[in-house]
Length: 269
Image 1 (tube, rainbow, N blue to C red):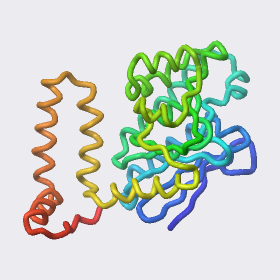
Image 2: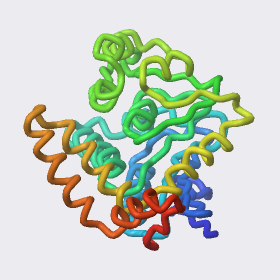
Image 3: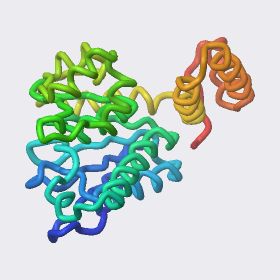
C-alpha cells in the first residue's frame, strides 16, 4: 500500500492525492474549499499521475474521487479570469482535453466515484471516465451556459454517453440532473446510498481485477477505437483485435480453465 501527493497549488495542501491498495490506485482531487475546481495545476497533476499509472503494471483499476463536499465543480473560473487572453484559454482547454483523453488511453479502467456536485468540466470528467458510481445525493450539470459560456469541451464526452437530445438539454439549460436520472441517461453506471459508495466502487473494481489484465487492456483500447469507425471498418478492426487477443497466453489459459472446470491462473501483469 502506498500513498503519494502532487505538489501544492496555491495553498500548503497537496492538490492531488494518490493512494494505492490491492491493485486500485485512487486519485483524490484535494481542493475541497474550491469544490475541487480544475485549476491549471490540477490538470497538470492529473495528467502526470494518469500517465505514471498507465506505466504501472501493479495498478489494475483507477478511481478518481473528490475531497470534501463535492466531486468537482469544473474549471477554476477565478484563475481563468486572471488571464483574459485567448491564447491562454486555448492552451488551458487543450490541456484539459489532453488530461481527459489520457483517461481513455491508459490500459486500466477508470472509475469516477461521485458525490455532491459534478458540474461543467467536473461533469465532463465523469463522462470521460470508463465507469462511474454515484451517491444518491449526487447532482450533475453542464452549467457554463449560466455564466455565458457554452460547455463545448464537456459536450464532447457528454454527447458520447448521453442521448443527443438529453445532452443538448443539459448543455443549453444548465439544469441539474439527479443521480437516478443520470443513470437512466447513461451518464453513470450505478447509484447507491452515500454510506455504500466506497463499497460499491470497491466491488466494481474487484470484478475487474478478477479478470485478465491483458484482456482488459486490449478490450478498453478496442472499444474506444472502434467507436470512431463505420460498422464495416469496426468489425474488420475488431476481428483483428480478437485474433490477436486469442494469441495471448491468458486467452489460452482462460479457455483451458473453462473446459477443465477450474479457476484460471492469469499471468502476473
